[in-house]
Amino acid sequence: MTRRTATRLLLPFAATLLLVCAASRSGLAADPVPVGPHGGALVQADTVRCEIVVTGRTIRVWLFDELGDPIDAADVRGTLTLQYADNPRRYHYPLYPERRKGSADNVLVSEALRSDRLDDEAVPRFALYGLSSRPRQSLTFAARFPNDTVRVQQAIAKQTVCPVSGRELTTRATLWNVPVASQSVFVCCESCIDEVQEQPQRYLTPSPAPSDDQAVLPGPVRR
Figure 1 (cartoon, rainbow, N blue to C red):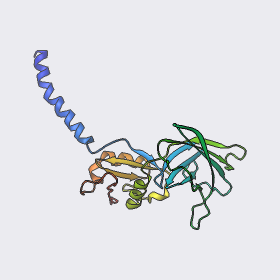
Figure 2: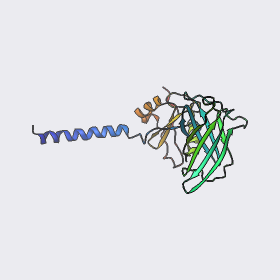
Figure 3: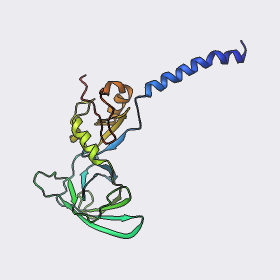
């Protein structure tokens, strides 16, 4: 058999193999993205995991330790500094424990921000003081404001539990948004990511195509 003949025979097989591999991954739209249980952006600063949530002109920072357990923020204070690329001026706002009835013990808040541009053009910097893990040192970090917090919050509230493990999503410090086709599947840990990626069709819910600002989420799968 000549080399040319062998190539002709192998090409159809190779093309079929590529199609099979592509089909097995076709349900996956993008890489999983970590999000906080309140739909915010996550930042790891030293041993503290911070979830940043923007609602209107209010910013909240939830505090968790390395294991994902809440950090008591009763004695923690902080400063939020905002700056924009087109404006050299810096805006400073205090961060303090939220005192509203029913508020969590691990959240700091800064309210009534004067800026109406709490978007991805803002460069926020945070400084926290009084953390038990750093009693004599401040904790400083930079972040970006998420621009789809409300949509993610609504999606997490609608799904409520991890479809793989059955755990409640709001009890976890870090969630993972696993895109499957046009849907978002939120899972509670990295091991659950593998399950969704290996069997994406199992976690899809037949429904009309979602609009740009909606996430169509599956219910839990009984194992």
